[in-house]
Figure 1 (cartoon, rainbow, N blue to C red):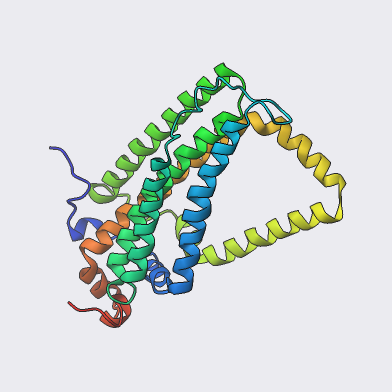
Figure 2: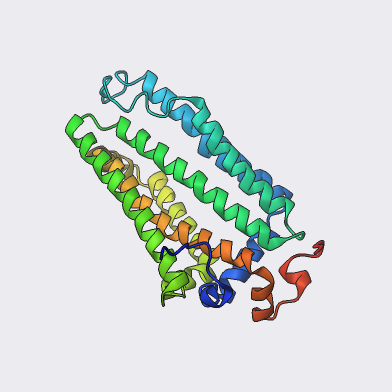
Length: 276
């Protein structure tokens, strides 16, 4: 009998959605006010979509004019060259942002579900386009083909493993997220602050010590051919994104049962403006 990962009963998925996951998700939507929504749209659509697309157009039009000439016969030049690719990615991001903004305090759980699903799909398109961009700076044809095979394998692995994880979550014994994921979910603000701090120190070092710029240039030049490999490895993040999406689905599907389980008031769970 085929097991459908979307047809689990509450008793089957009850242990898969932790209280911290539910409350962190709700708090994320509650904080999605006007300024944050505008900043989110500007960053992910303005910079992450159209500026990113503009960068690819600039690179394609200047393949043989840079300090290091690139392969003008690169087979990835026409891949995803249509602006409609970015229109689709931008639309997915817009839907995610509007869902979080519109359903904030009206139905927080519904906002969480739509936001996570559409943002995950948008990130899939973003990573795919990033791979195309990374391939443009690889001059060796055989190396590009090797990276392409690795990229396809990484995506196949992610989708297969995500499906298996979801099936295990619903019908097996792997109900809870790993301790690391739970810890990261509860401390992501602190982790983000530390990352920004490290980034700030890095750029401060570059400003103070000019020699660091020359060293960075040499290092980046030697590692440039490995950019597509970095995208292949980064694509494994979808194991986490897909896990969040399937848990958001079940949180939404059995939202009132989870509310009762965690002992949260309706106004705090759904929002002050919620209408049953």
